[in-house]
Length: 193
Image (cartoon, rainbow, N blue to C red):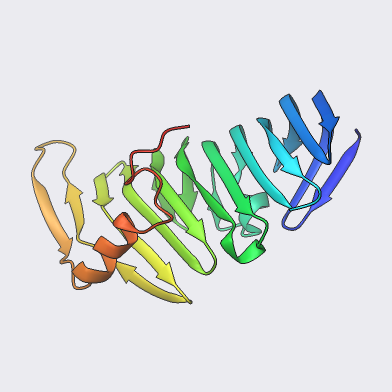
């Protein structure tokens, strides 16, 4: 298939194995170009119920294309799981990511990494690390709920001495715990792909 357009994603050069029976698509080893990189995926989609499960691995995805923001530049690899029970509001995306070298505006970094969970206006990023020439910045929780940002404790670990400096205390402990332990956080429940 030359092109596939779904909300927020434009795939090109799609190839792979697809099987259809009883209103259900099953696909395996599907490869496509997206955001300047590649995605390999497998999963199923039920046409009658609109339920689906998709498991994918992205390589060299361009943050500028994905975020439509030229200030944020790096290539990202990710593992992503998408699940929907048929109701788009219940669509759940979760996984992990790691980038190569890049920059945000004038701030350079060697890599970004972490885990994420996103479900209807609630985005959680946890075990986040920004490895930079200045040291490693880390936090256990970045949580956005209905447009409001909550941050956990932020540490800067000096790359030469290994000493950690607290840049910000956790002022939202209850909200950050909720983000890590929420129904949408499959990693917190011990579910593995």
